[in-house]
Amino acid sequence: MSKVGIFVAGLVLGVLGVLAFAVVAGPSMMIHEHQSPFGLEETVETISQNAIDNGWVVAGVKPLDKSVAKHGGGKILPVRLIDVCQANHAAKILSQDDERFVSVMMPCTISVYEKQDGNVYIAHVNAGLMGNLFGGTIAEVMGGPVSEEQNRFVDFAHD
Image 1 (tube, rainbow, N blue to C red):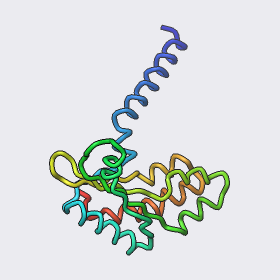
Image 2 (image 1 turned 120 degrees about the vertical axis):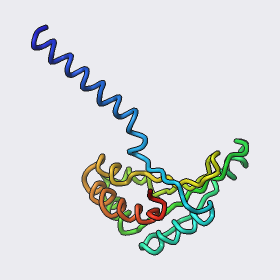
Image 3 (image 1 turned 30 degrees about the vertical axis):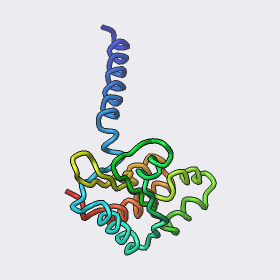
Image 4 (image 1 turned 180 degrees about the horizontal axis):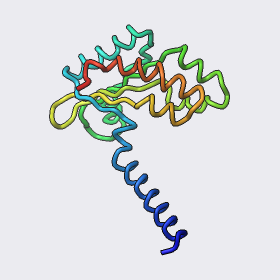
């Protein structure tokens, strides 16, 4: 095989390897899930209080399961969406036109839900990884203080 053929084969195998890694590891890297030691309402309250204690505002807690049922989706296990925001972090990003598109992910949402196994779980976006994908001020804010503070909100559930 020629050097060009070896290069092309190596390139193709490398791309396929990266894609396979992204498919297998991507979801667990982008979203963190932890089992809570508490019930649903106590987990929501603990996260909400931890957010407030760290200088964040709890913009609301939405009962997603009730909304799904109300709009014809049927009955599902409980799901609560906790919307949290920290005004100084948001302002650093939203004050720049080139980075304002990230508003689609604001406020930050932490999900608390029950699974069929009867346990309560917490899920949140890996803000550090997400921020670093965008670079600039987004990486500075999301990859630093947002990630660190959100991890503190749920540290009671870390393994």
